Length: 278
Ligand SMILES: C[S@@+](CC[C@H](N)C(=O)[O-])C[C@H]1O[C@@H](n2cnc3c(N)ncnc32)[C@H](O)[C@@H]1O
Image (cartoon, rainbow, N blue to C red):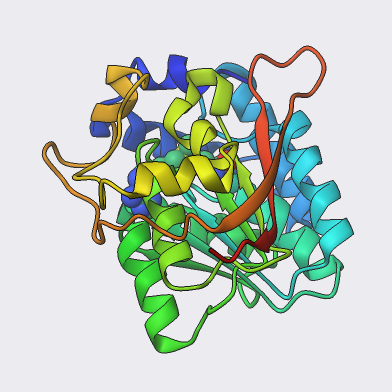
């Protein structure tokens, strides 16, 4: 399976759309498809076969296992994912949430073509009544979740989309009071390609965050230490976060890196363990 960086080397929309079409054609022509229908793991095994030869920016098995273990442990009713692509992680984690007594998996995706492909795969996996793919910008949708009451508390948030938005989306959730003790944040690609502003924030103390918050809401995205390529991916140039906020610096996080053996990337596992009053 190739990495995000290799995938990004071809990061023009046409190439990626071609790849999704190629993937769908591979799946629909696969001799094992009839047997795999309705079985999430068998559908993912077909995708894994395709990914051996074709660059796909998917979470993959070893990091995926870390997330599924945490789903088993926490047993969320609702899980939210930022960045669906064509639905690999939505199928893997949606199945785990369903198997552990959950009610819904929401997967947010900016690109309508990939969301459409994801819905096809999710249906093949038999998860169409459980996993909902929502097209749009993550910050706009998270804000709508809060305002409509669809999701008011984050149980598990899997973050795997526009790298500069990891931090601004987390702060938006904090601002709305969606991050509560017990909320679990699972951030992918924190080593490769890396996300220093996000890691610095979730590993900071309340005192450090309060100090930074004194200068008010940041303007735009903090792209310090991010690869230029990742900053230029997906979102239109000059785009700004939907809500510029300091979040809630009083939230106490316990944050650890989980890196599978032999993997160059890792998941940052962050728990909200309390709120420290001023
Ligand atoms: C690394 S891929 C997600 C991979 C997927 N989670 C998996 O493991 O199968 C990142 C996806 O995030 C989407 N994306 C980027 N910025 C976004 C945003 N602001 N809101 C929603 N989706 C976004 C991209 O279009 C892309 O499909």
